[in-house]
Image (cartoon, rainbow, N blue to C red):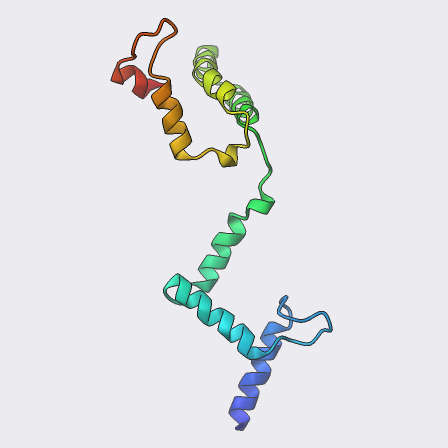
Length: 141
């Protein structure tokens, strides 16, 4: 190993030291493991986007998300809108529009997907007396 290669190896190990890339005994994993993980990540990402992917992951970690049910989110939305000074008429309209949705989904908001909302909208195409709503009315729901 040349002096330059030895210096590069030593620097690589020092860069790994403040990370979790160390075993319980305090020794680093083999440099080749770190490099193989980096290479695999680049292959998965289609290029050297590891830093961007890590930042995205850190912002969207589901284990850090505070769980809230749909009814909790609806109530929180209305409370925020009231606090921001929205009119009572607007708030009443918002409550009326979200009431059925709130009653239909007693699950964590993060488990509600676009398809769930679309199915709910599709099934909400009739009025209380069973008449079909117009497309304009459905778009407003």
